[in-house]
Length: 315
Image 1: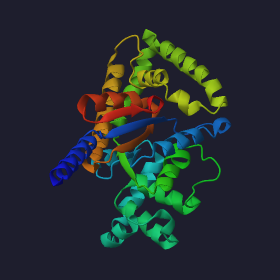
Image 2: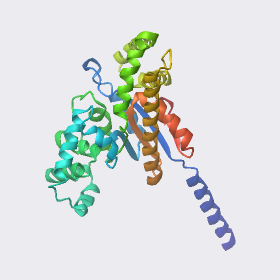
Image 3: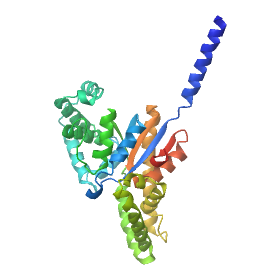
Image 4: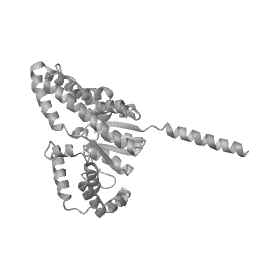
């Protein structure tokens, strides 16, 4: 009898271990529209419902890594006024703020609804001190709108999707963006546009953009803009445009732009994968501009075969 019990226990343990081994880490990628027009201001509501149902253990956002000095060297005087302002504040507070790691760790472990106003202020300053843009913005959002988030649509992915999900799940966000060569990319973009006037590429690009815009009209009216944006056909078109794969001629500027776009996606994928693998979390969600989705999918599948990569509409 004892032998039978022992064998049964060993069999159950074996089955449990086998089941655990089959739990593959997965990355669900949601392509966002960044800021949407007022006429479709509720576009992120169905996407938030989907993200809640997915029930992620970790959220990754399109914000520069805190320790990515190359990106911040560019961004401190770069294209984004918001990032310029954030860098100045971060640079300033690092000289004056008395960062208390023990206090920080204690507050980070608390539920969001348990935090007092002064504790939120401390976390805001702490994330600013650490140059953690994603969580700094999240804490500002919590401070302004409370635990349930904004009542009215902010029309942006952060206010209507990412941060509402983070507060609902009581999760911090993980930065994963890379903008080390964003300056070079925009220079190449301008060169490609000039070259396209002569070889017909601009006319091709305009035709694709117009077709994409027209295809999105009805889904937008029906509050399905997010679902339409995340169709593989839409994602492929967006990737094609951003990577200059639509051009009629591989001119110098267009080739440079394609190179910088693909390299950025490669580094973003690396930032995501390294953090996911280190965390050992099973369900990970990535919120990123829809133009990046196909590039990230390709990089993750090619270089990190142990991770299961899923697109929003294919989940």
